[in-house]
Amino acid sequence: MSEFFLHNFNILSHGVIGYIIPFLFVLTIVVFFHELGHFLVARWAGVKVLTFSLGFGPELAGFNDRHGTRWKISAIPLGGYVKFFGDESEASTPSSATLDAMTADERKGSFHHKKVGPRAAIVAAGPIANFILAIAIFAGLFTFFGRPNATARVDKVMAGSAAEAAGFKSGDVVLAIDGNKISNFSDMQRIVSIDAGHTLTFSVKRGDSTVSLRATPELKEVKDSFGNVHKLGVLGITRSNEPGDVLIERVDPATAVWLGAKETWFVIDRTLAYIGGVFAGREAADQVGGPLRIAQISGQVATIGLSALIHLAAVLSVSIGLLNLFPVPLLDGGHLLFYAIEAVRGKPLSERAQEMGFRIGLGLVLMLMVFATYNDILHLASS
Image (tube, rainbow, N blue to C red):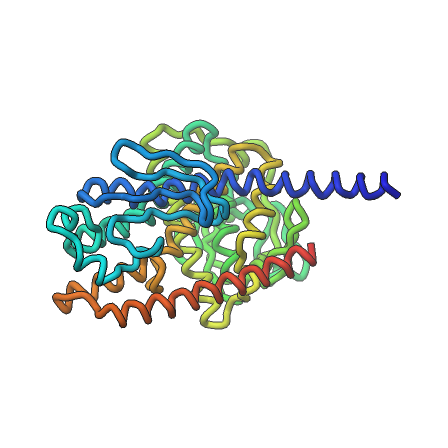
C-alpha cells in the first residue's frame, strides 16, 4: 500500500513541478518587463519609486537600490506591481490626506502631483513594454531559428467537408482570403480557425489560372498533440508535404523585427476578434483561461523545447499588455480613462468617484478571474 501511495505521489510531484517551473518562468518574464516599463518611465519623469515587486503578499527576498527602491520577490507569483511615492496602495490609488500633507520637495517626487501627461505615459509604459517584449522575442526567434514556411497548397480534401462543398481540389494553392494575402499554410489556418460560420472568399491558384471559391468553415472540436480540446473553424483540408512546399525561411534582423511586429499585431487582432465574437454570441466563452490553463500549457509547451516556451511568453506578453489596456478601473486602461477625463475636464475626478470606479473595477476583475478559473477546472477535468 505504501508503495502505491509513493508511486502516485511521485507522479503528482513530477506533474506539478513540470507545470509550475515553466509557468513561473513564462509569467516572471512577462510581469518583469511590464513593471519595468512603468519603472523606467517613472524614473525618467522624476517620480520616486518605493517598491518593485514580482508577486503579491509577504516578501520572500529583496534589496534596496541606491535610489531607495525596494526590489523584492513576493509569495504569490501571479503578477507584480510598482508602487510610487504618493500611492496609498499597490493599485496606485491616491490618498488626499497624504498628498495634501506633502512638502514642496516631496511633491516633486510624487506620482499624483505630476501633470496628466507624464502620469499617462508612466501607466501606458507597462502595456507598451509587453508589446515591445513580444516583438523582440518573435524577432529573435525568426532570426535564430528561421521562419517556418509551408506553402498553402492543398494535399487532400476531406469528404463531406466545407472545402469539398466549396470546390477545393488537391493541388490548389490559396493566394488570398477576403483580399488578404496568404503567404503560407499557417496564415490560412489562423484565419479559418476563428471564422467558423463566416463565409470566406478564397483566391486560389489552380494550374495556370486563378479561381475564386467561397467556403464557410465549420466549428469543430479539435485535439492538439497534448490531447487538449479546442473549438476551431475547420475547412477540411490537409497541407502538402512535398519537397519544396515545406521549408525554414532564414531572415535578416531588420526583416525579423518587421515580422515580429506583424506577429504581435496578429495576436492583438485575433484576440480582439475573439472577444468581439464572444459578446456578439458568435464565439464560445469557454476558451477564456486563467492561471491554471496557462500553467498547463506552459508545462506542455516546455516539453517541445525552450524556443516554444519563449514563443508562448511572447503570446502571453501580448495578451497581458492588451488586457491591461481595457478601460476597466484598477487596470492600466482604467487609469488612462481617468486621465483622459481629467484632461478634458481640466481637473481630476473626485476621490469618491475614483474610489467607486476602483471598486467596480475590482469586482469586474474578480468575476473574470473566477470565470476563467471555472473554465480551467472544467478543462482540466475533461482532459
